[in-house]
Length: 415
Ligand code: DSN
Image 1 (cartoon, rainbow, N blue to C red):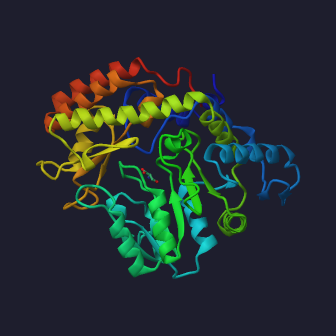
Image 2: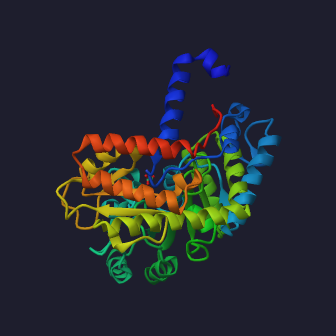
Image 3: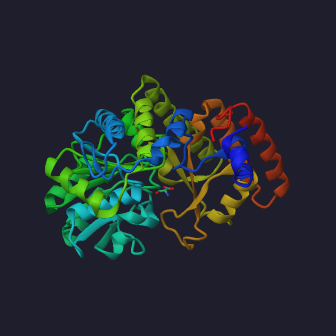
């Protein structure tokens, strides 16, 4: 019997419920994935006991000789993976990584130009409700009605705003990000280029997406999305002066003791990303997303931008009677987990929306390929074409369970 089962049956029972949910539903939230047992083991480890404020060889506590080695391995692996010189692996999340970047390079009320949240950007790219929009003046570019960034328009806006930093990278953008063009815009207005590659990092690491280096001055990513590591963030740069400012911004700027157990798990995750199999995985993630786009557009659904270059697709229901919220709910009943999302030309509130975002990374980790993704796309279409028919949703839920049971990811409890 596990320690958890013995010591805390109440929490253990909920872990069992969550394992069941993750095992028998189809997880298609584009920012989620399934970390390996090795990553999970590293995260749930004795390293949680250690205080290590500071950086390797420059700590404020004794007894850091082992965590120093682990943190250095995480740093070295990330450097190799993303082809850069300086990495901070301590950010507890992507949001904290981004907050530290701003703290490193901006003064209060400096100007940020980022992608509008409702066009696929992120809260931390200047949204008014986030500290990035409260501590700094934020301005936005977006996508055209065709769902794509118009780089000429970004240039026009940048020339008017004259920001200190331009943020590129998105949470709900199905197309390749052109870092080179972004850098030319940043250079024209004398701004830093900051690339947040949280969503696409696993593809970048595999050479399946344009590399943000050498174009971006600073790059951040989370480690748990397409990278499939533990929940957390990292910050990268090739500029030594910037790296010093970033390190001070993380500690003592906004964080205290680093989560060395998570840093160990980041190292394990990066180790997996460096293996040749990773390239096969990332390629299949893209293939699977394309299958979703193809099947659903053939079925009459409006796939934003006409397809995808990465791990996600956006469906727009502006031409349908139902909303993103309705679609999210119907698919949830059918055992398929997605999230509602705003779409270009949005005319509903962010709580309702006219679209959904669907990702392929998590199910690809379970080993699902072309045949399964074709089937899943057909089931998504069937559920949406019968948006109010709960008996059809219940039937699909059974079919989803049957498929899922053939691709069990955690064959033994990992908690
Ligand atoms: N919340 C994440 C996403 O779903 O894209 C971004 O931080």
